[in-house]
Length: 152
Image (cartoon, rainbow, N blue to C red; front, side, top):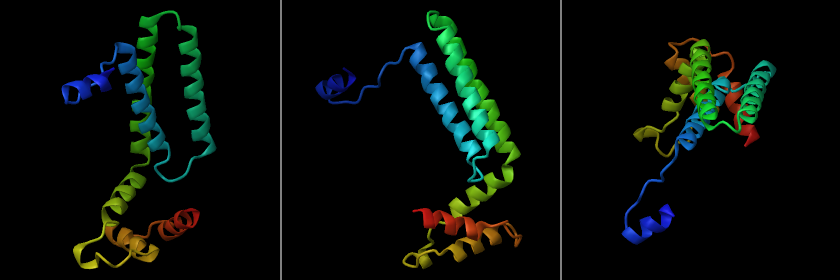
C-alpha cells in the first residue's frame, strides 16, 4: 500500500510500523550486532554458538509462552534486544584488539591514489596491518588473509 501511495504522489512515503513491528526491527538489529561481535575475530567458537542458540531458544520459548499477551510480547522483545546489545558491547570490549585490527585493516585495505592500479596482495595487507600496530606482529594476519582468499 505504501508503494502505491508513493507512486501515486510521486514521492517516497515511509512504511508505518506498529509498536510490535518496531520492537521486532530493533531486536533484529541488536541480534545482527551481537552476531557481528561473535564473529569479530573471524572465528565462531562452540561456546559462542551455544550462547547464540541458548539466547534464541529463550527468546523463542518466552515469545511462544506470551503469544496471547501483546503488551508482554513487546516488553519481551525490548528486553531481549537490550540484552543482545549489552552482550555485544561486552564482547566488543573483550575482543577490542580484534576490533581495532579489523577497523585498521578495513581502512588500510583501500587503495591510495598512487597505488590505484596496483592490486593489494596478502603480504602487502599484512605489512600494512603490522605497520599500523607499530611494528608488532599480528598472530597470523597473512595466513588469515590467504585462507579467506582461498575460500572465495
